Length: 213
Image (cartoon, rainbow, N blue to C red; front, side, top):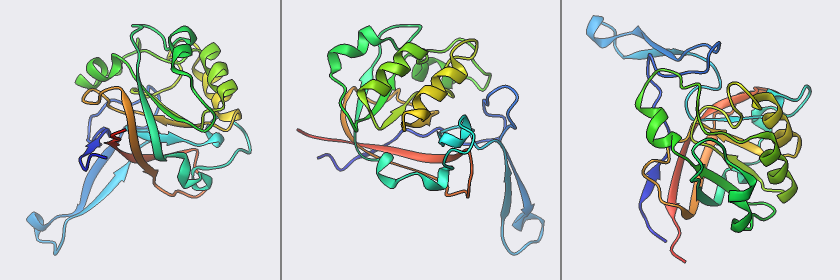
């Protein structure tokens, strides 16, 4: 196993890209050493789905578990990064040869990583998981699905449906990854959300370490 950890999180900063309609991330100083205070103290505001984050079932399923109910093992352990060649969708036909199995943690690397994170303007056209692929992932009974932009579903189509299918199947959703500097393969994943009581989601820090098989 390599000892080098790879950070696949998106840094939170003022003015960063956010989902249309969501509250943008904002950090301001409430106390400042430069202004005579004894310490620097920040206040942060924004959507629970800003940057790299995890969706809880409650996000789309009324009465579903909140982020504080997520089992640690959902996002800590062995994970597979799969490189997607299609420039529009993550399609079943491209996944069939990978033999996805029950309990897997799967992160999809698409052209989003190279393209979408280079701007703070929201990209309406990004590569996503359509609802038929969501059903396939549910049938394969994977444990966790990660994507390299702000939503597993599309902006104009399959947004809500894809979320509901995955979450109803007990699949935890990791969104907002940057996999531009990660090769396809097997990794150790460590990713934990903030433990916010009964929240529909929470920001997270995600890192990978290459597994040498």
